[in-house]
Image (tube, one colour):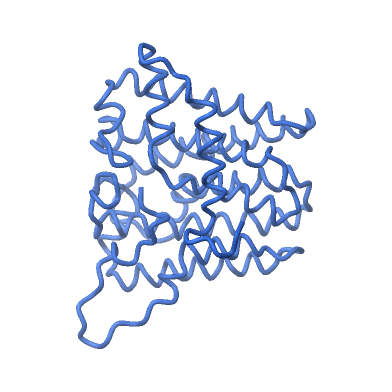
Length: 315
C-alpha cells in the first residue's frame, strides 16, 4: 500500500472490487435473482469489512489472498443484510447505495431470494479459501454462522425493530454489538484464525471490533438524523435504535460518545503483541477528522454531521 495514495486503502478496495466482479460478473440478464445479486453486490460501496479483514490479517503477518476472499464473504453477508433491512416489513427504505432499493427494482420476492443466495455464497466462499486447512475452513464458517444467527445480525435486527423508546446508551451499545459490531468482529476473528494468533490477541481484536462498530454505527445514525440522503446514497430517518438515541442526545453528546468508543478501540490495539500499524491507520482514516476537529467557538453555529463525514463512509 503506497503511503502517497490520495485515497488510503484504495489498493485493497480495488482488489476487493476485482474479486467481487470475478465472482458476480457473469450473471445473465434473464436470471432475475442472479441479476439482483449482482446489482446489489457490485453497487458502489465502502467495502470496509473486507478492507478491515485484509488490514488486520497483514498486521498479524498473514498476507495470502485467503484474507481477501474471507473479507469478501463477510461483504456478501453485509449486502444480504441490507437487502433484508430495506424491505417494507423491516426499515421500508426506498434507496440504497445511491439507487432504488433492490425490492423496489425487482420486487420483495426477488430481494428475499437474492439475500438467501448471497448468504449461501458467503458460506461457500468461506469454506473454499485457497491454501487453508480443513480445520481452519470449518472454523471460518462457524465464525460466519455465529455472526448471522440469534447471537448476531438476526437478534440485533429484531431488537432494533421491536425495541422500546427511550433507549439508554447501554441498550443501544448491546444492539450495535449484534448488528454492526458483529460483522466487524467477524472480520477480525477471521483474520486472527487465518494468522493463527494467540487468544490474548484475539481478545484485544474483539474489543477493537466492538468499539469501532459502536462508533461507526453511532456516527451513521447521527447522519440518519442530521445527514443528506443524496450524499449518503440511502434514505435517512430509517434507522431504529440509534436514531432514537441520536434524537434524544444533542450533537455534542453524540460526538463525545463516538470519541469515547474510538479511544477504547485504540487502547485495545495498543494491547496487541504486534504493532497494528494498518488498523491504527484505518482508524485514523475513519475517525481522525472527527477526533481531531477543532472545537467550535462559543456561540458558533453547529457544523452539520455531513460536513464531518469522511468520503470513505459515504454509501
